[in-house]
Image 1 (tube, one colour):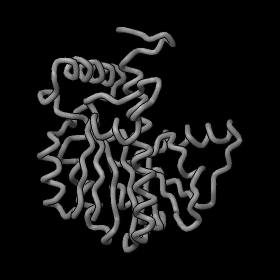
Image 2 (cartoon, one colour):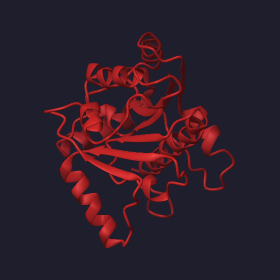
Image 3 (cartoon, one colour):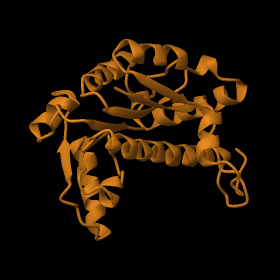
Image 4 (cartoon, one colour):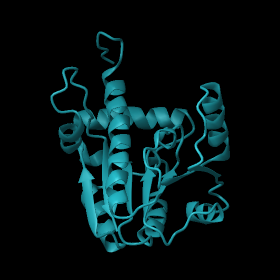
Length: 235
């Protein structure tokens, strides 16, 4: 695998760019959703996301939903870095084999009658397509003005030769870690279904749109590839 002068593989650079872009897209949409009245920000599968510690909005409560072990690791990392947990953040450890994300949210004080922004990043590829839509249907029942940003992996057969080689490497890597990728989408079919379940505005961002939005004219040529895409859907 080719490496640049910094010793970073091309695939690693593409992945790093995508991680940055999807996080920025979610936070940009939160700012827009707040103008529509959003006062709740739900981060599904939060991992080590740091937004809650940087939250510039005094009126926005953050709910982080994740596996208990992952949240325990995050809390330990925050303590080690001397980063305080803000009062606006609620950690919600959830065992998704026993309850849905929104059951756990409601038990923790989330108000599903209020306009809400949802971030769901780095998760859909580990779920079946129908399980993904189970979650999206719940989100589509939130009040008008609510929104979600999520990312997904393209169906391999829709990619060109380079993309197919790259996604095969990601699939192999994920499987070796015991977390196989099982969810893939055709962008046109995905957008159609999102409208069918109740979203009124859907934007699907592929490689060119993401690079134009977030990486245009960079001197280091950092940019995303064609494997991952980002969706913004508004109710």
